[in-house]
Length: 509
Image (cartoon, rainbow, N blue to C red):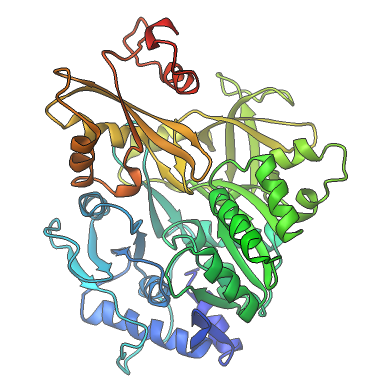
């Protein structure tokens, strides 16, 4: 089934129910939401020649038009390719090329100097833009296995990989939400403070299915004070937030004496939540917090830790429970495997594996990566953790060396690739360093070809011309050589240790 049928159903059941908001201003009820989507889908087909299976990319900030375009893409039978709006134009162009996108919608219409093949850039329609009277009345028929969302998640060994999420994957993920994360009612308002191209956007489906309100902040992003104002005025607000966002919300709430009025649920994930930060959030907002753990390859749907467990600090095992990421969600099984792919005993660490209806179909045009990641029906996540006797999963490491800064994934290899292109860089290695504000920050160890030929300003200028600014190293450390093992592999563990005790030379560790 085409997941766009959920919008059609909501419009038929509750045509006058409030649907889309910019801040506190309602811009569409469900009847108008669906009508605009149908007209956009008609334009995609008649004006731009988009048909079933074609890819259409979105490189946009959060907006109500973003939701309209997503559903118009699915309504026409096409595939949405949401791209992080913070990416550099060169990075976004590569994704568009790899996906074979026919169109790329942007906020301004002038992001790219060049796009591959027949791909064209279009300016996204504003919410108040007129639509034609012609409408595709029903979504194009799709099977559960048909591709719906092509999500690009970088790897540590090269270019981004396109995660293929089907209509069935998205439905399974969405139906887990009211079962394992939080019940949804028509009175709820989901606020898109985190990027709609990622986890926050994925939570739109279940809220459409239940006829809830969809709210885009006027700032188009995350500002804690603005979020609190929306919660007070709209009520029953839910949102997805990275732990660093929750931390900033706590700090702002304490400055203005806000206790969470109007907030129903804060779902956090995408990075480590430290117990001290969680305790402060509970002290500030009360029992409004739920944790989820997922990956792009199994979106938002590996485990969940419910609010009752998080809030019950009187339990003697609260610390261990709260430090976990919860139990398997309803549509998946979770295992921890040893090096031979066999299940580990409770309490023994190994690689986390998951299988079930939410697991991706594979990587787009990348059968080798697919075969290495989907093994015997199980998604090998690359994350390290352990299960206890009651099925609570605790993450202990990330074997893929991903740096999570402000809730965004930054992959060391892609940063290293850009640095290594500089003619004066001999070697470069990137690791994450603990950061009180952002969770982690990017640190680059650099060996120059000639002593004194490089400094941070030169490398920053080089980097910002080629990659998104949020991936830029916060710190450059210039050294004579990088520590390596006998096989010539750089010892990143040693670099991380040195960051904690920099008085000792790298060669002595």
